[in-house]
Amino acid sequence: MGLGESLFDLTYLILAIGMGVRLLLEKNKNAKLFGLMAVILGGGDAFHLIPRVISHMSPLGFEAHELSLSYGKMITGITMTIFYLLFYFYYREISKDKNDMKKWTIIILSVVRIILVILPQNKWSSGGSYTMGLVRNIPFLIMGILLIVWSYKNRRTEGLKHMGLLIFLSFLFYLPVVIWVDKIPALGSLMVPKTLAYIFIVLEGFKYFIKDFSPDNLFNMSITYAVMGLCAGVFYREFTKYYAFTKATHLGKMHVHTLVLGMLVMAVFYLFSKNMNQAEIEDLKKPIIIYNVGLVFTMANMMLLGIYEVVSEGSQTLNSSAMEGISGLGHIILGFGLLYTLLKLKKLSVRSIKI
Image 1 (cartoon, one colour):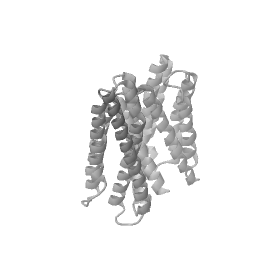
Image 2 (image 1 turned 90 degrees about the vertical axis):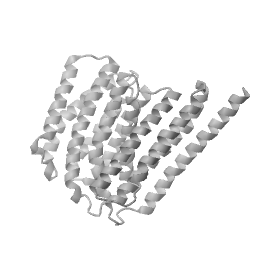
Image 3 (image 1 turned 120 degrees about the horizontal axis):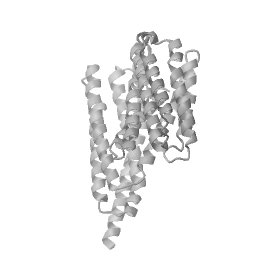
């Protein structure tokens, strides 16, 4: 359970932040807004999910990390509110619903929610307050209901088609955890489908703004991996410094792999595709998607192994053989995607020579 949840959480963070960075590179201001939403979502959730990953891997378990988990929940509470506030402005632009009453209602609910989250009565330093957990989620729930209704009413509008349903699902899985998880800890597993709903919200926006597969798209993917690689390098440096860890770790390889297999390889694909027509470029879409899936999964596995090496203190807190096996699966998908893409490029180059 700990291994599966940890890998899922890290994959989600990489996907959310990665798609957000990619959208920030678009010229469309609404794409930039959605990209900012995704980065805030992933960045905020990292403050809660990474301590959970550490707790699964550390021999000291969750009790030793109660403080970081608690404050991580506080930060996530704030960033989730900002995420939905920004989503409202995205909805406002896409639907052309310029009703100022709606705007101020969402803004006021957001401010009230954030104030409630940061109040000392939440007792974040001692694990949190159940009562305040209910109180601070009242304005958040009202926000959610309003956004569900408004988005659903505009479901025929391109860019909002499934948003109402996905927001509904995110709250459907979130609320039982808030209300009953103290009495029924197993309900915490509902955070997985809740997170899936978030991934699909980000994916819906991503597909809406990035419809065409073009050389510029590949170049922007290269820049995205450059940013992700640099972030991975910062994480490696600061994480190992915090734990005073000086041995070799997979975290030290993660930024290099991301820069080489992500930034450089995408730049090479961009150079190959520059002189292709649209039909030929579309031919590359499927293999490059497979390659990217393999690379993201490989990045998540490297991060998982690296964190485990640092925090496990030599203990077998998780099944290391299973981790290595899953990591191998990522490499297989990555290798297949690379070979598939190269064969497509070879086929396309031979075809262009004949023409």
